[in-house]
Image 1 (cartoon, rainbow, N blue to C red):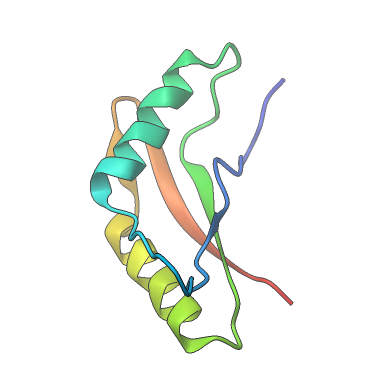
Image 2 (cartoon, helix red, strand yellow; image 1 turned 60 degrees about the vertical axis):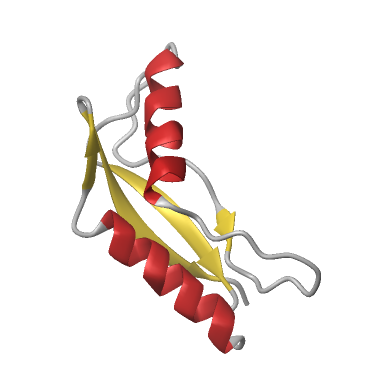
Length: 89
C-alpha cells in the first residue's frame, strides 16, 4: 500500500491539571525510529499530526512549540517528518 502522507501520531497538546510532560526532540526521534520496524514503510516526507484545542491558548502554544521542534522537516535516517497542525473543534 502506498501512502502519500501518513499521520504518524496524534499528540494532544492539552494542558493537564495534575501533570504536564513536554514533548522533546528525543520523543520525536523514538517515534521516527519505531517506524523503521513497520512492514509497509511510510512515504517520505510523512506528515506528523499535532492535534490541539484552538480555544485553549496553552494547547495552541504547545502545538506550535512542537511544530517548531520539527521545523520544515525532522530527518531521522531515511524518514523525514513534517508537522501538520490539526485543530480539534
